[in-house]
Length: 120
Image 1 (spheres, rainbow, N blue to C red):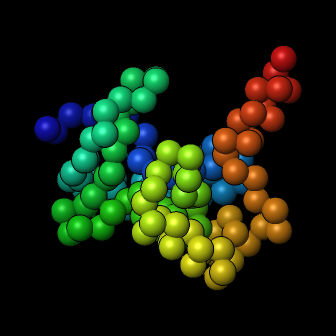
Image 2 (cartoon, rainbow, N blue to C red; image 1 turned 180 degrees about the vertical axis):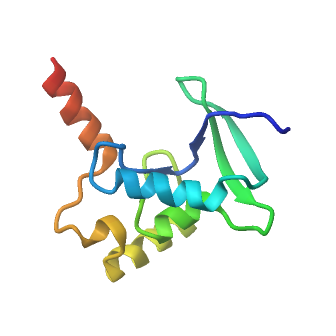
Image 3 (tube, rainbow, N blue to C red; image 1 turned 90 degrees about the vertical axis):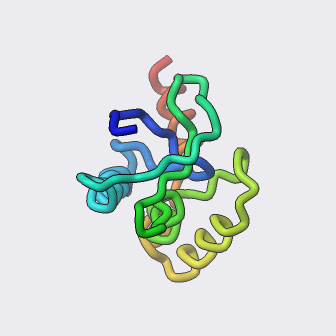
């Protein structure tokens, strides 16, 4: 509706900004959507008040899937049953794209737990 909104991309989890590949994921997303009109299919708010959604460009490109395909996000199995995301992650892993080039990439949900434990 022409207004800015915080959107938590549905079914995926990108590396945090301070985490390996976090900056690349952010830059990739910015290049994909900046200055473009998008459609957000909303699944309601998360616990932080952000809209959980699938983001699509007008040409049909699905941002959530493009991030996984590029190896810049994990399929968030805990919250998603989307088998297309599962397949895209499997292909990115096999091709060692993006974060899958690392021998042992740390999922962001584990990275956040580690950081939270260090802060205590």
